[in-house]
Amino acid sequence: MKIKSIIALLFLIGTISLSAQDNCSKFYPMNEGVSMEYTNYNKKGKVEGVSSYKVVEANHTGDTTTANMSINLKDNKGKEVYNTDYSLTCSNNTVTLDYESLLPTEMMEQYGDMDIEISGNDIEIPNNLSVGQNLNDANVAMKISMSGINMNMSVDMTNRKVEKKESVTTTAGTFDCFVLYSENRSKMMMANQVYPSRVWLAEGVGMVKQETYKKNGDVMSSTLLTALSK
Image (cartoon, rainbow, N blue to C red):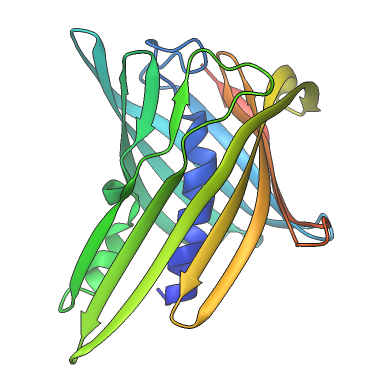
């Protein structure tokens, strides 16, 4: 998997993973077997791929729940791009995403002979969302060492805030959502790019819609919840 693909993967999971669900939060009632399908579109509205998510395990200990989710991504021709899984934790009415488990097995195998260091701050979504609320920043950084050369990359989600409430209709239904805005900065070697993004979150469902924009505000890519099974 190329470095650019890794960054794209982190963007994809880092936003869509907000749909992961846990019953310690009103936004994320998690049950094993819950599945979601997301369709990804390019800037022209054409399908680029379909992501399938499934809750495979949920463990409850006291007021903390740890959940494991599987992901399968296929391109617009139905060809499998990757399979992976990741874990989330819900505690104190806040869901956090474990970034270290975001990296797919295929990538780790590809860079098996290299040293990889991962650090960062998890994405957090609290129960008490309200319009105008500011949310904590999140980030992930990777350092890959090979043949004496170090490659550094990072993705930072900053200026996170709850903009408004809005109703969204997809093939999966109609949902009342909070709209969360963030600015996503990717750094790789000498490249430094910023992509504003919005995520639509519904109670009991998670992410319903996501859009990433160019600097001029034009939509660069989008994702919609197209199927939901509880």
